[in-house]
Image 1 (cartoon, one colour):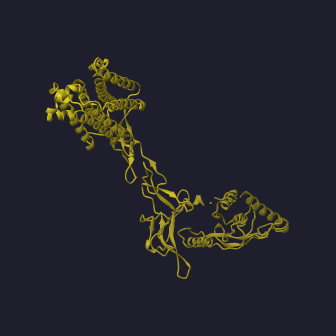
Image 2 (spheres, rainbow, N blue to C red):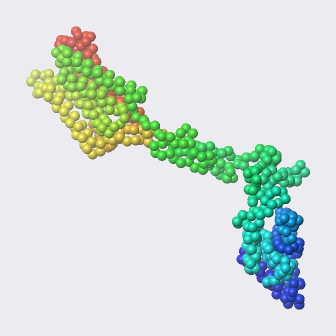
Length: 587
């Protein structure tokens, strides 16, 4: 831009120097080739410099002679309309004595051809008041020059403003602030404190005629000074769109994305072409045409439409739940079965079948089985800290006591058979204290493991948001996973040892043999818990607790069925088989 300024100023200075040396008359009659334009005399003059053409032919400048005139080519109709609007406005003002009494407006208009050099020449000419550039002199000193209407582009308008600023001419703001005129149409013409008139615009629709010509049809207006308060008005029935329809055409090639979706730009397509992609799991968008989705807070989850976040439901195996209520009632009812069997054994403790099966150990086993059924209640209901702290240790201890009791019964059976020979030293190992030592030793080892676990890293309740999307699962964290599976593995070791010993002793005479029933009970016990491990790892939320409750009930019932129901059947319904002679009979 600065290069253009310097070049234009140099052209003007060069033309003045040449003019000075080539002509003798140095007054207003300087014969300098300047712009030719349109002039109307008046008491006050307005300068107009507009690009009536937008293209030009510029010849090469040799700087050895006066620069040639620029030839304008393509005519700009919009600038010509502006010039005609100025002429009309001047004629209306001059013809109305109520606006400027005894004063007429005149103008000097020049075509700048959208060239910086010609914009500057036009500015100098309107300042001089003549169709020549005479710096620092005005030929018509009795006709004041008020202002210039210059080009709209910033480059040319800033240059013209600098030229006029040198001569102290004000762009009419000082005078405009005081103008307030009632026009013949009934509208009031005025200017605000910044010199701006009320904004009045016609809304024009370009329509194609059958002959292929363009018509400008007024379909509405925008008038900030409207007396009826209707600043914006439009007549939709007059609008014609390029597709020859009255309805507004769709300006995008894709429909709007509803809440719950986000706009994904199609590769290779315009920006208005996109795809509506559903928000990912756990995220929402609550606005139309959203460009992205955002995650819900940790304790909230999207609704079905993924348009808002809702509080996550809290899930645990509760007593109000059908599953929890069914398991709780089953556990309580099941715990009464060993109690009933215990009463039967106590009542018939003097019979041969109860004596032959070690009554004291059987009674301890029945008490522990009742506790096994009841320990499932610790897995149902809201996971309180105390409940989480005790439920797995209680389960581990009562089942260790049950399995160690069965192991003791199996060992006693083996020792009893081996001690049948006269003067056998194994008779000492058939004493009841051997069973108590086995049970106590196995139980103490499990107890030490549990105490270590609870001392170092005990279980605690937690809110799990990862196991099931959209749900807060309140469950017990086992604290130390290693300690939990160590307790579980020790229990499995006892059950496996009892199963192996019982399987090896299954062929002993029926007189002293419980090994077959212990074999079936341990086989069922191990099958249930081996199946529980993969099932619990695949379960989520409250169903993890439900799987463990089911495994406890199933394994406990296996022990009750195989160890005690056959004996109860004989005691109650086959009393003839409950005799010493029947028990002493060999296979």
